[in-house]
Image 1 (cartoon, one colour):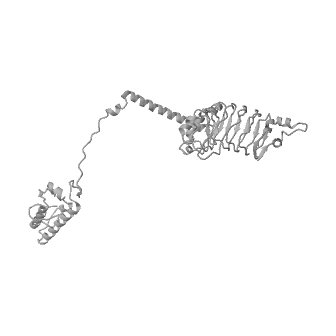
Image 2 (cartoon, helix red, strand yellow):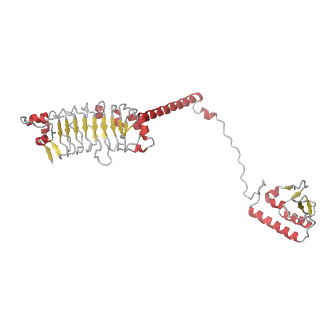
Length: 404
């Protein structure tokens, strides 16, 4: 618990303002312009400070002040440093009409208020307030309107802000520090800083929208006169390129909108859609019957298993019948072995085909090609295998027909 006294004030001066020997304490304190009282564990400022009538700069940061001291006798103050105390409310500042810089960071303030009379305030630093969980820094609209024409630097970093729409009226800002907040809306940011034509420095790091694609490029386009973004300088080349790219996109967008308006005026709303011919609904082919399809034959077939059983029975009958007959004379013509089918083979084949409800017409042979006609029943029941058109060459039979 330390209270500010005259002795402490005298020790808080710089080496350039020492007390003269023939000078009284009252005269000495009245002559002081700067007081360095930081980090002195001061929790109370008494009336002794009122003796410093010409004081312009007062350093009281890193102490234990619970409120802003009464400084109505120090109307020449231009800079007041009160960071890192335990101040909960902005008050007692109305008499300081010459105040240009106010530092209140690191306190417990929840509302920016009480600055209505500070028409010459140029810098307001109120960053990193120690607020209860879930609360954010609030802005008094009357206070913001009062300082809107004068304030040039605003530091509101680390105050759980999810919107900066309230500071839209601060059109004359040169620097805005809003990093380490909860800002997510890029459109709101564009709306707010788009009207700050003098803004040349902007700090936004630590907000959620910093992770969005093209964040830096988009912010540079929003603030046309920005020189430093998040502590990094913006080159004139990159700024010119991004602005030209944005202008080209805006021109294309306007052209598309004009074309849409012209189309709507010419055809009317929905006219193009109403004049389109209806889409024909063509009938779909019936589902195919599942079964085995012989290679090279465009007809529906039996299931593979049933086909294999019929073919096996036919081959077994052919083997039994041909074993009982002798081979006929083999004739050689043009290097190709031909054989006549025996009568018993023809009979057996006819019996096998009748069992399958099939009819085979053996036509005339021309140029060693056999024309085989299949009825509709044959196509549905038993597709002919290519192997059946190649019978053994040593077989010959009646009927006068030859199979190659």
